[in-house]
Image (cartoon, rainbow, N blue to C red; front, side, top):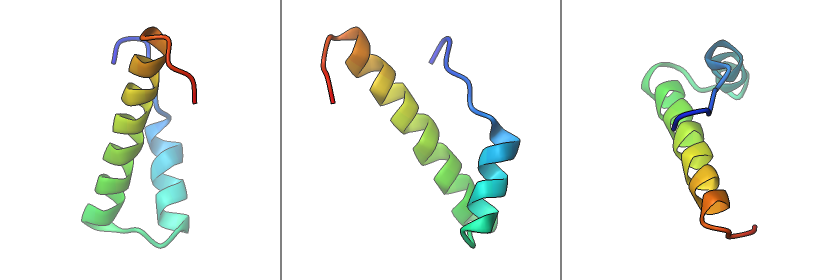
Length: 49
């Protein structure tokens, strides 16, 4: 995931606004990071959404 950044504090605040706490918030942040990595990989492979 080189070159990808996630505003963790902002993402956590958004997760809390959506009602996620504890592990649910952590899982949401992980899902966002995985999605970012998959999107970057797809871009490198020439795929389009």
